[in-house]
Length: 257
Ligand SMILES: NC(=O)c1ccc[n+]([C@@H]2O[C@H](COP(=O)([O-])OP(=O)(O)OC[C@H]3O[C@@H](n4cnc5c(N)ncnc54)[C@H](OP(=O)(O)O)[C@@H]3O)[C@@H](O)[C@H]2O)c1
Image (cartoon, rainbow, N blue to C red; front, side):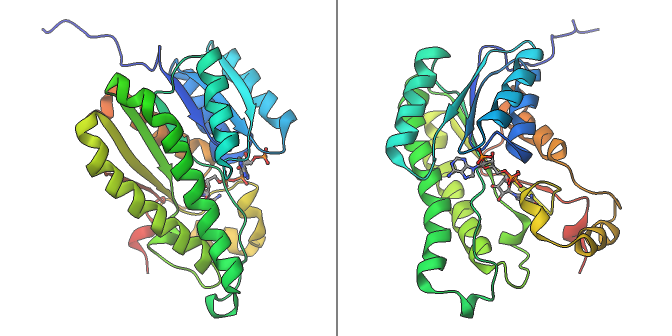
């Protein structure tokens, strides 16, 4: 029998999770720490929540830090990455997760300014985070970029068009980057959650949430931890031949009409 190999681990890796004070980002930060990664917990306004996530990261035996930055702003991202480098080292794993509220309206009723804003927030945050992390990833000839998209990018719902368009464009950027950065040793993958119970999803009424659950083949709510597992998988060695992949996390609802 072949000698058993130790389980792959994220020990020695540094992960930056944007929007990690709550929801999917918080669960991802904790899950990556459980895998052994040092984690930069980015937050925007909610320092106390970010501190609780850091406490959980450290309770998992990992190093970490909280870092305030509005990831739509290049200078704040650059400062965040500099601070992370100084404290934890170069970033190996970027989880592009922060959530930007958008106008919930039919597309034809949204002003160009509000529509453009939704696209700009989503794409500028990703663009600048990647730019800030790339030099070190290129030097190491290794890196993992994980994009949190949404099922709505491919399976639209009325009134969510600004968000869906922004996330579709984000997925398109990720696909192109997968081709361009692959030869440099950098993988770019997408997780595509369906409706997940977080603060962001509370904009939808209770009856909607229950209906979503009941129409899923698995008949369960999706929780942030369900998405975090896929993110940790993509960050690790077991996903070494995945790039340009999109992991659907829907409880099976993508098969339903
Ligand atoms: N929930 C769903 O149903 C669902 C489904 C599919 C995809 N997604 C995607 O999953 C990701 C996370 O969503 P979520 O539901 O977990 O959101 P959430 O619970 O509302 O949390 C949002 C997070 O984003 C941070 N954030 C907001 N603006 C920011 C900014 N300008 N700079 C840095 N951080 C910022 C918040 O920080 P503070 O708390 O510090 O302000 C918070 O940590 C998003 O990309 C979203 O599109 C969500």
